[in-house]
Length: 471
Image (cartoon, rainbow, N blue to C red; front, side, top):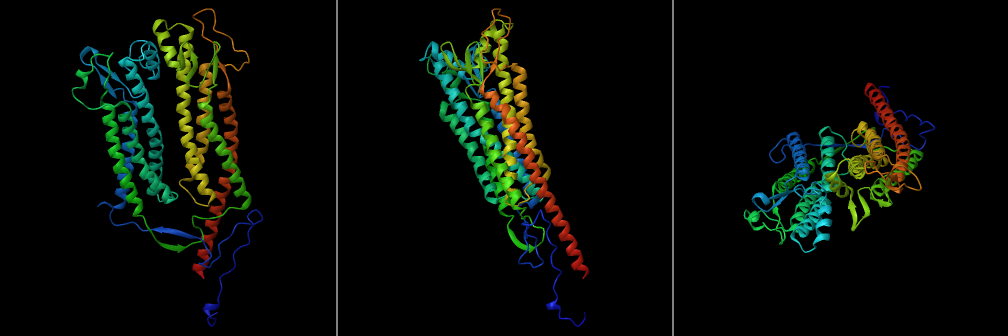
């Protein structure tokens, strides 16, 4: 052996793949044929801070800005008008200081009532402005919530040296995070033409005249959240921009690996079913035929027709009746419909967010990337379907909905609750539970099979490196 030419010595051939992985390329010992692993070199400073501290600061800024956004959204003092005993304080989406019977309801309720009575009154104009501005604000705010949590997710992955996906997605999130928040606050101010005029309260004492809305604490908190989101987005982008890949070393267990044509095709099918699941997540709450009661059809949040009002919210029907007599069956029926629908929406939003994380993991694993934390990639699909299931079960049990062809009319006794019959909306939600669980089972089967395969390859590569080192 001592006289052998070392340049002609060859490493032992790779082990033959098993039958199930016949189409999986096993890396050879040649550096030109094996996968490579990215090596990230941390910069010395990011805006004068060590990289780890800058990363932690970016995480904290995103988290604090998200908390300010949530606080602004639920704040009850977004606007005021009038002075002294006539001063009224209103929330973003609800009319807190409205007259008894509509107090605390969605702005659509006082808008429908006031504009039906007198479409030229200042209160009608006020309710219209608040209803439109609140909805416009939420158009920009809802995606901001999702983007903030996705940024926190990627910052956590980076802190633990995990694969955080495609860089362009991260920069997209950093840019659109403050943009969506800025759009939200601009839409609110332009929709109701409010301002921070200190004389505003004095100028708006007559509700029959045109009312200038005075911005209160809610917009201030939202503006602070906007400023924080700008700094958070810039710092997060700088932290990731400095994480430049400057060195690539050959390895047999890189982040990229194929896992068989059969499993790849199964994952494609799983992702198609995932698209069906998210479509039903959206289509079910948006369907206008959720319930029937007393001969009236309604959606998840609104009754399609009630007297002179069209598409009136269940809280708008419940509160005037409950203000007269809370023992009325109609009070219980419509208040329960409103509360159970809000609970369903809460769980459905959580299910949609878990679905987004699930979709991210599926896309990255389809391309052979070990994205994020394996445990989180397992829990997010399960959490998505479970949240949807819990929301559906809560709605069904709270409303005591029946699935009958002929829904009974209101009972003769005022103290009896009205029958609620489930229609197309809850049926779609129930069907989606079955589709979701089947999709999760197939996804976890493919995911865990590939995860086990990657682990086997890492063990094989470690053994080979040990043998070569001994030789």
